[in-house]
Length: 338
Ligand code: AFP
Image (cartoon, helix red, strand yellow):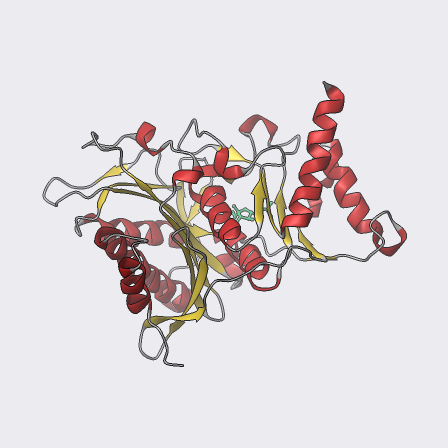
């Protein structure tokens, strides 16, 4: 079969009525920006891009040089094309308006420019996550409140993994598809169409060092997985934790599995660890479109009505039967408490 480039795929999606020309351009621009981030990431120590930037982001987290570089690449690439009304990023407190000298479009773009950035200095896969929303019709100067739309309203979501290969995984709500960057010709090429995540799995991902801080239903669920063949589940489970959400999710999108970043006593006041608008929602959309499930442990992630641009939520996602099993334990514990 002849290889299908991202551009060709976008044209087909337009013809099928799944996206309009502006959204197609948006995805092309984001993909091009991510190629540049991949090049910067790949240079490593030789590019002088490793290490701390010496600044903190809006969440009070120390920024890496590549966090700052990746954010700038995405902002610059998306400023002038006329496809966006505004951007919002993990690295910036407020949305970035489109400069007055450029035309404005109908879309809002949210991104985590470099997820897993604490892994950069040790040469482990990192990534970019993005989500696309429609700008409300009557709004010409979008503010944070205009981004606060539930995940179910996303028009597109994707992530790029900068790993042994550079991969783009994308959904417009008509399946989840994977593109591999052909480095020789510089083009993202369709490598898997309509990805399906198996409903069942024997593999889970969680940061076990937080175990003592988890809520009781999480302790129960993971305790049963760890008990293996001798426990109530009657089988052994395997564990993986990359600590780059993109890499952990990509493993699940490739061979199944389940990912948890649950609530724990240390992060309870923040609502969770991962950010709803540019981590949990886009990943939930991608995973659901591949037949998986994504909840906060209590409700479907994409049904959460956002209250803040940088809001955090617990995240359970991946193979549907395990997500449902862990979610059921939380709901049962909640109803037992009344
Ligand atoms: P950084 O971008 O600060 O490295 O955070 C990555 C992340 O948000 C997500 O990609 C990981 O799944 C999670 O944090 C890792 O968290 P732990 O530090 O608890 O392992």
